Image 1 (cartoon, helix red, strand yellow):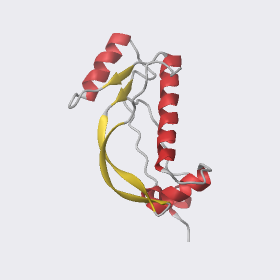
Image 2: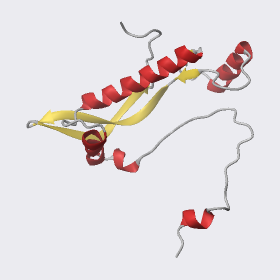
Image 3: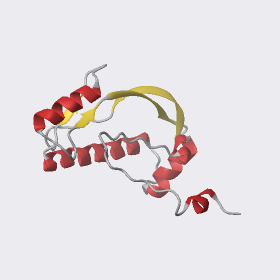
Length: 146
């Protein structure tokens, strides 16, 4: 019996003629569990101790890569205010900069998210996924740290 990808092969394509905004959200189910998170840190990242510090390091590397991209390509980083309409800001900035294609801006917004909290109990880290946080996805520095 054929599976879904085999049935769709050659019948379904993705064609994009115009893209006016792109939001990227990713979900990896196994990482949404404490066991999956520990396995990821140990096996994928090669960290022998699955510490909450590891997650901060991953985040900081991501932020630095975004900052470098913005600086290299002269893309403004815009910090959205609470309840500010992102589409209105992006449209205004697109008009001001005269950008017809490419990245208009990198927007930084505060989002509520579920997060893992970790604490050391009996010499081992224990993680729970019950913490709600308001996270600014990027506190991207204007210049590289010295």
